[in-house]
Image (tube, rainbow, N blue to C red):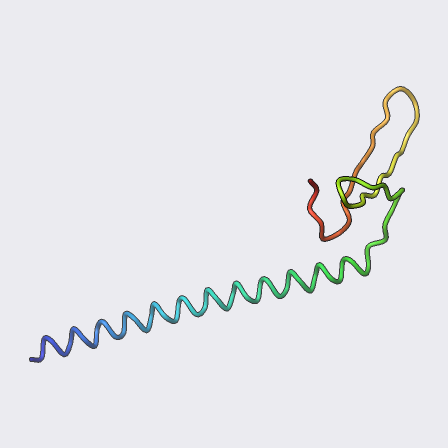
Length: 85
């Protein structure tokens, strides 16, 4: 009977450890998501748009042109919080 009891105790400890590791992983994921959302919101408020706003694929993009001569480089940037495409 003693061997059976020690197995239960060992299994219980193992399950508690697995539960603790899972709880820590979920907590870290939630903290990371909350931090990312807060930083994105802060960026939206503090970053100034540059260049011209042009309509592209149902949204808008900032277009900034710089330079002169035969080769012109055009940098395109989507509105913060929107993925291109």
